[in-house]
Image 1 (cartoon, rainbow, N blue to C red):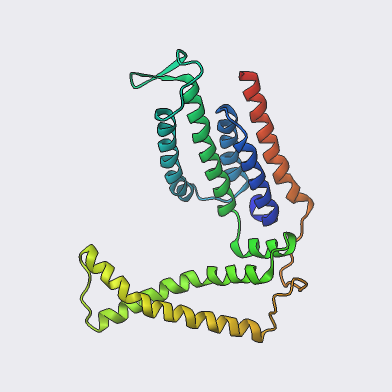
Image 2: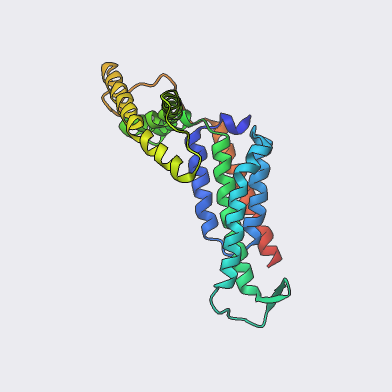
Length: 250
C-alpha cells in the first residue's frame, strides 16, 4: 500500500508538524474534520486491520472523554456565562464546552496520527531511515534496535524460567501476593540472561567492525523520492480544507 512504501522519516516529520499545527487550534471544527480525514487516509492508503485499529484507538477515546468532562467541570469563569449549552439537564457555558471539545479532539487527532504511523511503518526501516536521512548517531540507533529485538526474547526467557520453576515443584501462585513473590524470584535469572545477551551482542558487533562511525555504508538504502512528498501534500490539503470550513462556519 501507499503509506507502507513511504520513507519513514518523511512520514514521521510530517506527523510531528501537523501535531504542532493542531496544538495551535483552539476551536473544535478543524480538529474534528482533520480527524476524519486522517482516519480516511489511514484506511484508504494503508493496509490496516479495522479491529486492531479500533482496539488500540479505544483507550484514547476513554481518555479523551475524561479530558472532555474535567475540562468542562474545572474550566475557568467564561467571558459570556449566559451563553450556555444543556447537557443531561444541566446548563454549561458554551465557551467552556467548545474549549473542552477542542482539547478532546486534539487528543484524538494525536492518537489517529500516531496510529497511522505505527500501523504503516516497519520499526527497523524507521531506525535505518533516521540514520540515513535524519543523521541519527549509529550508536544510539543500533542500541534502540538491539533493545527492540530483545523484548520478544525476554518474553520467551520469562516463560522458560516459569516452566523451570514448575518442573522443580515451586508452588503455583493463586493470589496476587503469591504472583508478586513469583515475579520477584524471576527477576535475578531474567536480569542475568539479559546481561549475557547484551554482552554477546556487543562482542558480535565489535567483531563485525562496528565502531559507531557516522560515515558508514548501509545494505538497505533509504532515499527520499518524489512519491514521499505526496503524503505531506495530502495531509496539508486535509488540514487546509478543515480550516477553511471552520472559517466558513465561523
